[in-house]
Length: 213
Image (cartoon, rainbow, N blue to C red; front, side, top):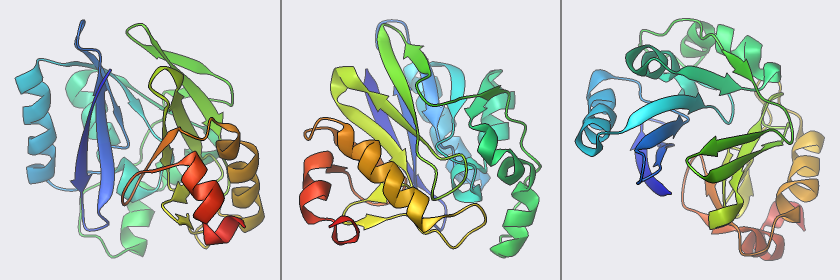
C-alpha cells in the first residue's frame, strides 16, 4: 500500500490518498481541501498516478476534514463512508463554515455508508479495520491497517496532545476512554497518523502524552 499526504486549508489538516500499486485502486481519507487550487493538486496527483478512487473515508465530519468529501464523491463516482454519529455534522457543513467564518461554498454532505466499530474494509489485498473512537465528535473513527502497522486517527490523538472536546458532540471523558481502551490497545510500534501535525506511535504516546498519564 502506498500513502500520499497533503496538508490543506488554513487549519493545516492532513488529507491522505492511499492506493494499491498493483491495481491502482485508491481511497481518500479526510478530503479537507477548501479551494480549487487545493483540489487541483490532489486531482493532478490522482491523474498522474492513474488512480481509481473508489471510497472517501472520514475520521469525522468537521469541516476541515470533510469540506471536499462531496466534491471527491461526485468527481470520481465514489461513496462517502463515516459513522452515523456524525450525520448531523455532515448535514450541517454550511453551518460549520459560518461558525468558523469561512468564505467557502459548501453544501450539506450525504454519508452513503455508515461504519461501525469492528467493520473491515479492503484496499486491494490489505484490510482496513474500523475502530470507533467517540470523544472529539460523536462519530469519531480510526482506520487501522495492521499489515503496515499504521492507524489514521483523525483528531482523536496527536503527538503529545489530544483532540479538542469543546465543539458539538465533544466529550472529554469519552475521548480519554477511546484512546486508552482502543488506540492504546494497538501494538506499541503502530504509527499514529493524525489529522493535524506530525505522526507518532502508540508507545510514544503511552510514555509521553501528558493528557494520558
